[in-house]
Amino acid sequence: MSTHKEEELLTRRIIKKLSGQFFIEREATGVHLIDGSMVRVDLLLKPKQVAIDMGFCADVFGIEVKTPDNQKNAGYKKLFNCIKQASTYSDSVFSGDIPEFILIYPDVETSLACYNPPSPTSPYFERFETYRRAAVTVIRTLMHKFCVGDVVETHLGSISFRFSNATYYDTKAGRKTYSVKVPRRIASKKLSFEKYKGQVNNQWYGTG
Image 1 (cartoon, one colour):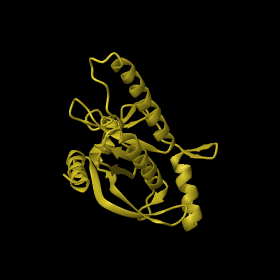
Image 2 (tube, rainbow, N blue to C red):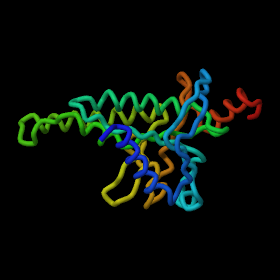
Image 3 (cartoon, rainbow, N blue to C red):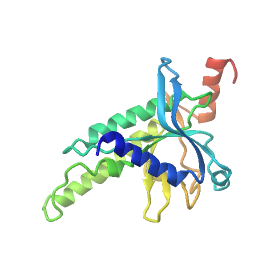
C-alpha cells in the first residue's frame, strides 16, 4: 500500500475516534507567521461542548498525520521531519486562529517501532529497551518545547493527548491535570499562549 493511502486510512481512523468531541477541518490552510509562507495542516480541531465540559480548554489545535517509515532503521528521520513540520504549524495562523499546539499521529512509540530491535532472546535486548525508552522520553520532552505533543491510542480504547510523558487530555477521563501547560518560548523567555497570541494579533492586526 502506498504511503498516501496509508496516511489516508490513519487520518480517517483518528477523525472517527475524535469527531464525537471535536469539530474537525481537513487540510486546513494557513500562513506562517515568520515568513508568510502558505502552510497546510492535516487536521485543525476545535472542541465541542462535550470536550469543554470534560475540561478541554484549548480553542484550536492541529494534528499532523505521518505514516511511520517501514524502511529499516529509518523511523528516526521521518519522525524528526514530522516534528519539525508540526512545530511550524504552531507558529502559523489559520483563518485568524493560532493553534495552541500541534499533535503528531501516530505517537512517538509507534513511529519508532520500525527501528529494528534485537530479538527478545538476545543478550542486548534489555539494554536496547532501556535506550529506546530513554530516547522516547527525550524526544517527547523536546517536542513539548516546540508546542508539539502526540496522540496515543490507549489500551482502554481512549485517545490521549500527551506532552512529554504526561497526559494533557483523555477522551474518556477528560483533562487529567492542569499542571500540563504548553507555553511559548521566545529566546530564553517563556510566554503564556494568551500573551503570545496577544502579541501576534497586535503585530499582524493592530489588536491585542
